[in-house]
Image 1 (tube, protein in one colour):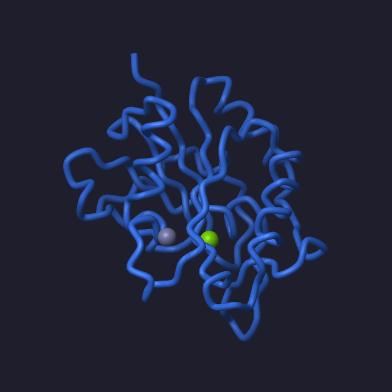
Image 2 (image 1 turned 90 degrees about the horizontal axis):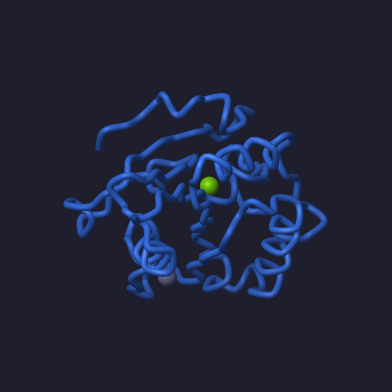
Length: 170
Ligand SMILES: [Mg+2]
Ligand SMILES: [Zn+2]
């Protein structure tokens, strides 16, 4: 039997984004990381219900040279320590111009996570705070996960309190 996964965006979903001039950015330093309160317990409950929790995150600031890869990974390690229910972090370090297969909304990270954990994508979910996180990738039209926007940029809305009811058809 294949498993079900919840693919989680990182910034704006697990941790508070840094807002500058109305735009949201990932924390550029480990010290700036603020994980949303109560998330660990809520995600543990989803794990207990059989979901594999996989973080899929675009970190193009690494390709742009404004953030070091080591910083992104140090932040991921801290999140992993605080939220042990998460099974895996999958990161795209590229920018659009690199033409990689992993930068969301491309499906590379979803496919990698699905292969690693024998995931049935049709019965899985993507959670994000931007349209591009939950956009159904063209190459996943057949086996696309359901998409959710769990949190908007400036609102604090812990994932589990949305009840996954705002399912978006794209
Ligand atoms: Mg985000
Ligand atoms: Zn990539």
